Image (cartoon, rainbow over all chains, first blue to last red; front, side, top):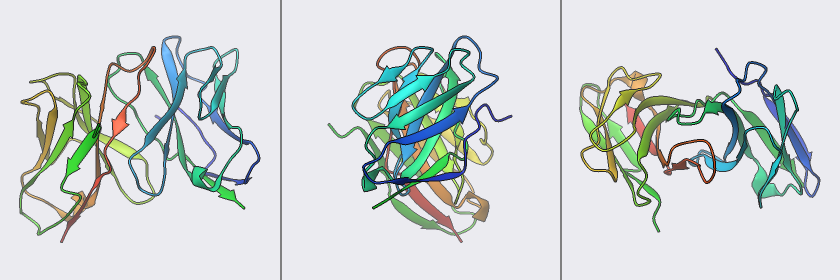
Length: 110
Length: 115
């Protein structure tokens, strides 16, 4: 059973914010939300993760709804190098593993 | 700091041949993982290890074996390769996931073709 649901693809204009949604309606209280991306068949790269508070780092912001059933990854100023497949993953602390779905293919256009 | 290094990067095998993929990490991580990725799909976990001398099965373990004799190395073996094992294989390592300062680091992949 898939723990997360993401749109298969989305386009974004260069320089604009990209908002990537993720539904995780069956998330439990001790499960984190992780975001990774994979650029053109390279190894996946960690972006950000959170439990219930919103998080921000140098790459992105993560907004988690109060009921924790969905979240949004925000790339504040998308560049062409942000074109990638983005994976939203739900997992427990010390679960030892990440389960990847199909992700969202994000294409940033000039 | 090399991170996670996979050897080899490319390989072509004949059906029935065996081979070992090597993953090495220099970050002193306890946990290591082997994933496979088929075209247009996400990564699927083959096997993982939570420490030296330990291994466990993931989602798709059949046809593969692993060993973690040293903390920094995680080996993936194919005893008798089949065309269905044609894939890109990714190794990763991490501290315990969740909480602060936790992320998995991935290698650049091994592209394996079985003919």
